[in-house]
Length: 206
Image 1 (tube, rainbow, N blue to C red):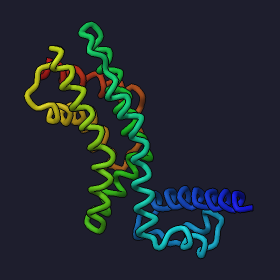
Image 2 (spheres, rainbow, N blue to C red):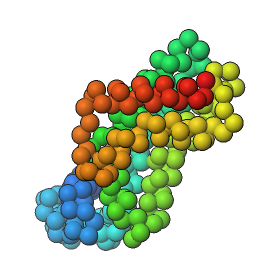
Image 3 (cartoon, rainbow, N blue to C red):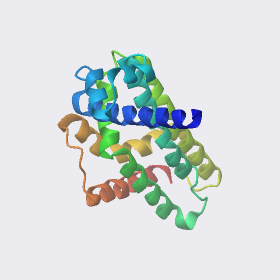
Image 4 (cartoon, one colour):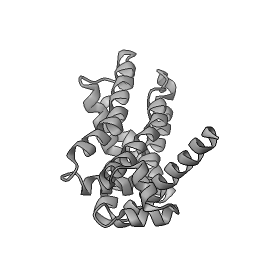
């Protein structure tokens, strides 16, 4: 009986999280009410408050839960073979996955939501960056240092090189999305950004 109750509670928790994510994305933090979330999750408002003390805590959990998705990206970034013959191919594959993952519509929407509420919730924004993108950059810096130690790249500051790599890939599509609200990029666009970014990076660091 207890296991069934725990299972129902977990399902309601997931339903609330999914509903809240959708509503926050559509209406923003200020425009979202707990009534909206309860209605979409098909639970009572009391049930929402039973799982989350207030809207701020629910928002924080939703934002930080997305950093778990970064784990697959970190594994990818950490797994670049030190092979001179395939360096271009390996970096292009990494770049394409990198730019594809970080320009997914929901990721871009969440980024805009966090930025829009950065002054109201500065600690949340800092935690989201540290647990997500900063972890990727740190791992990428370690990988680039390893490639430099093997003589495949040359650099004095691996973390700055990691920032340059990410910037070359993401500057155009992410800024376009932030300023115009257009969250869609064609596969050809992303292929182009990835290939051009890798060429520029290797011109500077090989």
